[in-house]
Image (cartoon, rainbow, N blue to C red):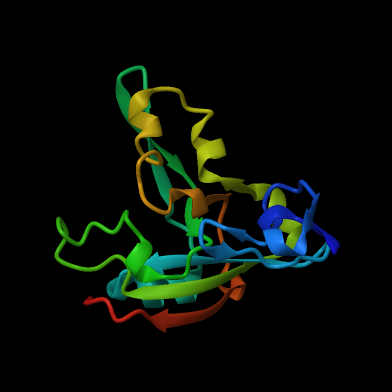
Length: 167
């Protein structure tokens, strides 16, 4: 059976695929109708949860190297298709005294805002240099990472769950 899928609803590219081809990287793609919202996840530390629930995701940023200087690209909220806290390779609890994956937030991006959602490799491609590419290359699960350009309001956060990771 041939069905049209919107490749996780992220890129706006629709391709016909066989029902048996619905698995990529061990994760199941969900069938999407045109105009349907896009569900992703964001992980956060316990001490940031209430602020995020109250104000939304507003402080996301990405470090960018340009001309030998480090700057911050603001309003870049990092999201993932992978809802398992154990597979978030970027969690730096080894260096920090808390877990950055203590809570998983479920984020629903309205279809009308889909163009602000960019695959992390596509986003980083606009910033040349090995230092910039190292943010996404070589990290387990990075194929599931997305950047939302802008602020994610509290209304788009439809759920949160303690992951079992130590705060």
